[in-house]
Image (cartoon, rainbow, N blue to C red):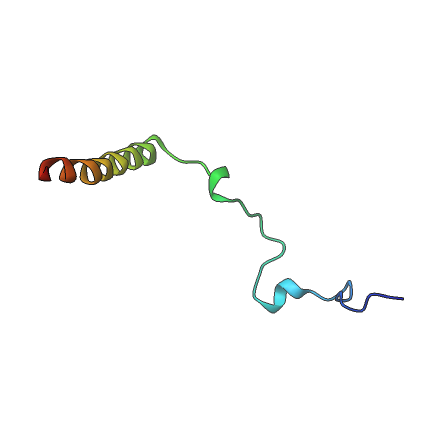
Length: 60
């Protein structure tokens, strides 16, 4: 018995939703990032930690 739930091989289902099937794609962890981006991320993490732990410690 044939499985009729799969689309035909020539059916381009990615084009139905606007995906470019021929594009070279990368995910975020594979993307290059600069030293400046690392510095900004570390600075944001430090400020967040200072707010998360500093304010409750000052309120005691």
